[in-house]
Length: 321
Ligand code: ADP
Ligand code: MG
Image (tube, rainbow, N blue to C red; front, side, top):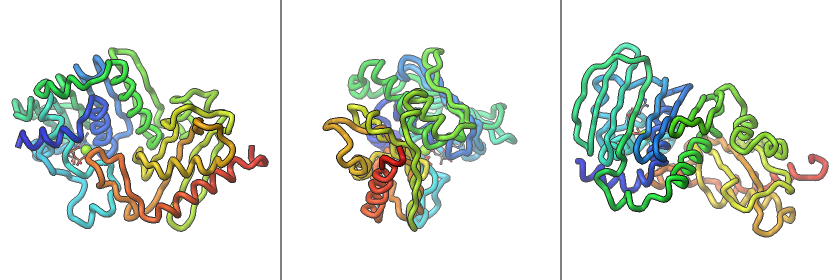
């Protein structure tokens, strides 16, 4: 129902950046190699995401807006080995319940356009377009004025959107992303770059030059990434980025294990800049913890954390610098 979708939206869609995140994740799950995001007024007025992925078959378009309708997992067993970014079937119905949404999609053989406002389908018709999906969201939170009131300044909302695009791009250097705000380009990745180049695009070439590469694996985990030289630190923990099986996640214990790797090398209150990619059997990773899917639980977490701190420690040994 529209009501339960709005309740779900309360958790999944906190702000414009959440819409951007969910739509990009859908585009990635659809196998896109090019994802272009266009926003106006920090996303509160307008968000458009264009992809060149698989598209949605005509028969499934309305279904995609039904709560818990996901094409990505089929039974309970799948929940324990999630390899897609989405699996809850909540994003589209949630967004549709609190905005004006237009989705245009084509599988290459058939195409559809659907318009939904506040959860009510206004229009659903066959439409021609190139293969892929375009989603336009306008008037976000038009029917939830209290939520609207909690928005921060446009500059803050915009920086949260930029963060989301940057964070996702770190896990997908093979996808070309672009982000434009009021027609000004804020992010562009080539889709043919490596992790180092993506990091350079986000933090600047001079910063990435002061970061060292590491990689290591044991029987369960494969870790790799870049960490800054001890002289190159930041005042915020925000510069420790963790990507697990392609998903940007937050995990305090992993962040701590990065710090642990630095042992005595850091000044109090300073944090290394680090991007760490961790690949593991999805069976060891539980992403079904929170609707935004950013919190994860890891079995063998202690083993992973010591692997990380040992690897960072060794990377920083004088002979490696
Ligand atoms: P979830 O991603 O958890 O499955 P969503 O509500 O985000 O749930 O999306 C519902 C369904 O709509 C997806 O399972 C997928 O089948 C389809 N879908 C959404 N966005 C796209 C897209 N950009 N390209 C292809 N299919 C899409
Ligand atoms: Mg999704």
